Image 1 (cartoon, rainbow, N blue to C red):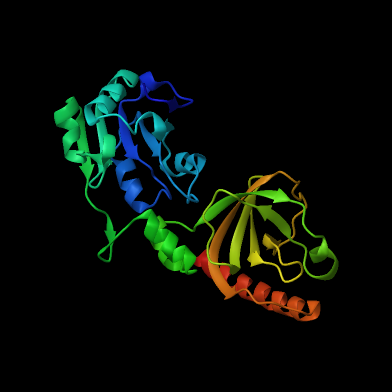
Image 2: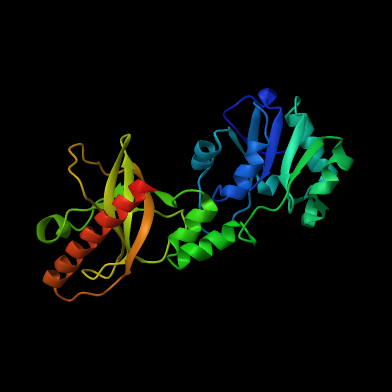
Length: 284
């Protein structure tokens, strides 16, 4: 029996796209396009390490329901056993959509081309999706982000990379001696190269232009994610609020400042650069 986590009726599902879908990049969206009106994503989550995308974001981006399967409940199944379980769980399933490199069953012994012969379920196999001859994969997107290459990451994702993060209490130093910031905590997401970014902060159904710092603070030597909002905002955020931080452009690497005055001067320069980059983003 599959351990399936879903808030929708399995009896309503008529097509399934199978995969991990980390990042929900342009290659994944090609699979989504092949689903019918009552299609859903069956997310087989065997991800090790930090994610590029939560199931909530996958649902938002795909505009389809997301159903998660516990990998531990299927990893020992033979290919036919796995497919038989799908047929029992989704009794109105008409077809399955997978990528060209999809594998399943114990020890990944079965390939996309085996699905129909093992189960009689109609199968749509989506060809490799490439940009300028380079296959689009989540691992490559992580490489781009690790090098602060936001342009390439955006090209492969089809959007700016973003994370969901929780508002936490900061040092209080920014509002007193520097610039007021929203302090964020994020444990589950893959984080880009440590540095300063032109960014967008999304919360309370609004989008705020911001400049964000990611890395080790000069003031106390601790890791931090801090975002200074570049426009007036009255609502404020409370500790525990979950916001989305979208990375638009890389500004600079982290620097260590011994003098708060020099740090404030640099942040002022970062703010001007962020404003310029975000104006360009508006024109995209």
